[in-house]
Length: 452
Image (cartoon, rainbow, N blue to C red; front, side):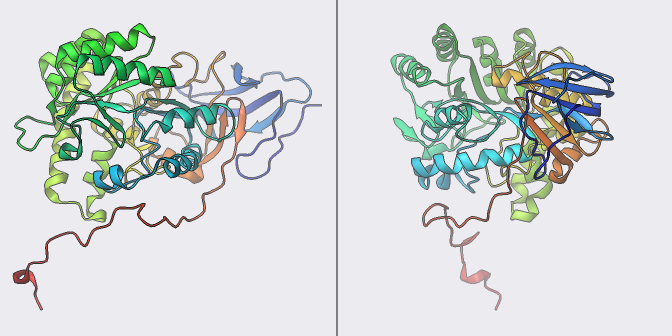
């Protein structure tokens, strides 16, 4: 007799050698239209997808009638160690290594609850990304599949934190390198401790910049040195690029993935097309500030700046996509504007709304295409035989409306490596003294401005 589904809390299915997800509406993550099918899982992998699959005695059954079965989401730009700061000051100066690691381990459960079965954290505070990934893989921490970088490579000109970046050494998630020898030594050090990616902050903010986006703070020769050093040891390179020249030079240098790639000109578009380098636009942060900025008191100037970044970049990103450049979904989750567990679906919505993707194209960008961020291209991110069984069961049809993925009540089951998992809702937290940054207020108290 075929075994019945054993359930406890929402999404909790007892372990078994075989599991079949029965009678669902399958979105395969490869861009094909949805189709009715069963999904048969053995150990950690999908062994068959089709109608009326036969099963052996003892097989667990998960009834997905009327529901969508699809690959779990992959977030290729998630800062799991940042803990949702409101400012760079808070991020760099209010975090202790041990506490940051413990809290990051708690945050990964929020990703699972949101239907995320894999993510890339390209740069982490201290080096805790490597340890967290290893703890997940060892089964000590329950979390999605994780790929990680170490510290982002910076020059003394800074990253997005400007003058907060020192001339030498490490601060927060960044390591300042100033010579060829330092570049090579730091890349090798990070690979020695076990990173999956090397990240470079190719652009940064300077006080008197006169370019769109950010200033390129690395030259082409330096970028090629990073790539050669990393590639010689079998590790890919990802770059933070906000601006035309930085995106062009990262592509020419042989980068394996580019974050943002905004404000591209024709030369930059041609370079990424020639290199076929995947791009992660990561518009979720900007879209949240643009659409919900009033909720947090954001200035209209900042909202206008981010509106222009999306509007001016959408055309060139679309041109690159139509020429064969992969577009991947990443959300910049980890800041106060993008808290963990809330917005991992949001980039799909932005792809549909602002980049002209169909829902199925957006889902592909967040699943099978995004597997490259995990260094598991072709091994996860799709519902087909031979792939790792990283799936979600959704109450609704994301092929018609991707925003259904933003409702946690609609994520009925999360299956990771062939096992349906359940993560309890986290308890309310009380942050320790000094953990959060604090301000006196949002503006200077001028006597002339007092109205009473």
